[in-house]
Amino acid sequence: MRSKAPDSLLISRVMLLDDRKAFAALVERYQGALRRFFLHHTGGDAMLADDLAQETFLKCYYGIRQYKGLAGFSTWLYRIAYNLFLDYARTAKPAAPAEAIPEAAASVSTDERMDIAAALALLSTQERAVVSLFYIEDRTVEDVARILSMPQGTVKSHLARSRCKLADFLKKNGYETK
Image 1 (tube, rainbow, N blue to C red):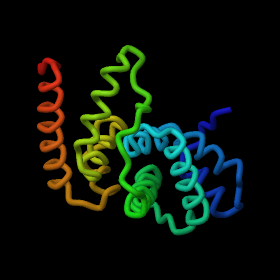
Image 2: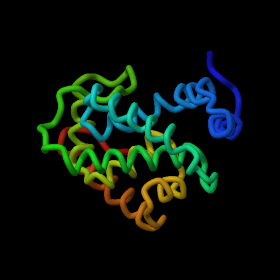
Image 3: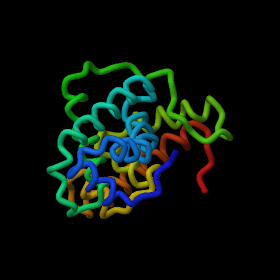
């Protein structure tokens, strides 16, 4: 059953009463988006994305009393997720591009999904994070800047550079540009 309570009420219940049902409602609300975020950063490795999302929620639960409310809860949660991914990326061995492709629209063929995954793999970790948050998670430039702790101008530069890289890759692979 999906909770319709605002984030602030759920967060307050978790902080003050250690209400695990309230935290479960937050997890339910954000787990799909976090998994998708990690899928784009792990080359489509669903098991790794699930593990990272779970670890993000654990860090969130144990650190929720440090949440000050200066930014939206989802912004704070994505910041935890991004830092966790950076920690993982620093310690992980470089892997070959994964065969599994992130969940995409049903109308996209397997070949197209592989091309999209390959195109995203060309981007740096920061560029991929910016593209993922802005285009896939539909976050504003301001939110992306807060989540990634970078100036808004840098976010815009990453978006512009990423669009060029993605367009070049897709054009070379037979896709028409509009």
